Length: 240
Image (tube, rainbow, N blue to C red):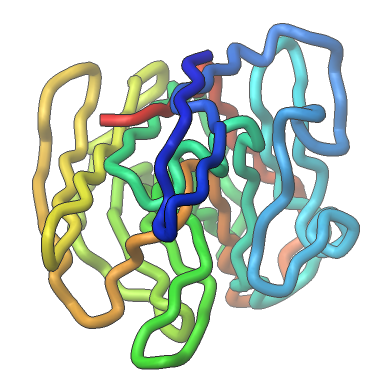
């Protein structure tokens, strides 16, 4: 873990880690990923998230996300962010990387949009504050898995880059890079080390604050019983 002293506006200083990794090689847990991680979401706390969506935690040394029960139309996102880099990477050019291990056949009309995020933070746009982030999601349903880069601007979700069917497969290492430059954020999506897409966001609602993490959103168009599981491993993030 790399730690730097960062010169902030107004001459104040803060210390923060600028890299973090987690292989999840520790005891099973169905209540999060441990003390290095914090639950993050617009109106979610961890108790509500688990009650609505299902267990999230560690199983057999991997990161496991589940959708359980019969709840319909659960579309409000939540996620987890590594605490050590929340200060050191806030608003800086950054990357996030994770290994997609597997997903089971999701039940009926249930689907999940889940994956790494960057620039998860509270940004003020036109005088109005809001929670914003960019998400490279594995959109997983009962027929396929594909990668889609989206933006949550505090009020609406919009697609920036749809990489199409079969853009992610079991054991792929997926990586999202975000370069914060004057007037815009530039993104590169990589699969197993090779670039598979680039896009920029120069809109008025671009997110320029925050740090990396992992996000999930569940879509259920009808009350469908059953359990769906998506598994990741080998998370890392850092400064570009």
